[in-house]
Image (cartoon, rainbow, N blue to C red):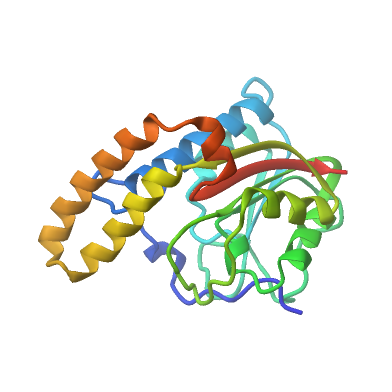
Amino acid sequence: MSTMAPMTQPAAGRGERLYPPRASRIYWHLTCLRRAIEEVIGEFLPAERPSGRLVDYGCGNMPYRPLFEPRLDEYIGCDFPGNEAADRIIFDRDRAPVDDGAADFVLSTQVLEHVAEPAAYLAECRRMLGADGRLILSTHGIWRYHPDPRDYWRWTSEGLRKAVAEAGFEVVRFRGIMGEAAIGMQLWQDEAIQHMHPRVARVFSTAMQYLIERVDRRYDPARRDASASVFLLVARPD
């Protein structure tokens, strides 16, 4: 069975995800995700001794490569034919072009919800990792439908932990990004701007993202970890 769906949009055309403009309709979502990834990098990839090989599995345009690459010996972006940015192309849909246990890190950002067979995808992540490796994975909890070309899944915090554990991992870090109050505002914003002129939508989304940020900053972190728009986890082979 295929683990991932092929790309339909060129990687270079996927927008600025690392440092989004304030007018972006997902400014706060992307900013929080980047900051959470930066925290993971600071904890698990020491700056004083860059080392290791990271496989970005289903890499897209690799927005987080500039954050990881200075801490590594090698960064390998893997994706299907059609991604001109990928370092290695996945021709066998069931297997990445990486040897068993060859990766110190596997990075998967916003891929799992697009995967037809999540268990097979996670098993492939496990295969690529060495015994002391780490899986760094983010995926959606509560979010709007966004096919690319398919959008199959949403996860609860408990369900995601269970799926990762069943693939042979132990979760060592788990964080929710954007709590329920901010999610409600985000979903309403995304529906409303579809009916606006682009110039009006830009002003509206800028104002909404400011409000979403203010609300989310006041949200209880424990509640956010339990129910969020995005979950980011780090896991090691069990």
